[in-house]
Picture (cartoon, rainbow, N blue to C red):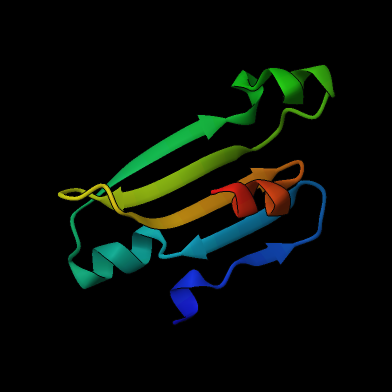
Length: 83
């Protein structure tokens, strides 16, 4: 099941994701919710002067099951492992 295998691109900022994208869910006709959180609102990221990026989750509209997680920002690979 490739939906549970995380992917990471080690750039600056890092890019990490696992699961479905919004585009894939739209194409499949799946109803979903989206939640985003900017790194600029994260005190650790601001303290380290590395606050570019965001965290995005897509979840099932009816069950809240996480269908995908996408992170762009410092230590994105480590953060994805915490999801």
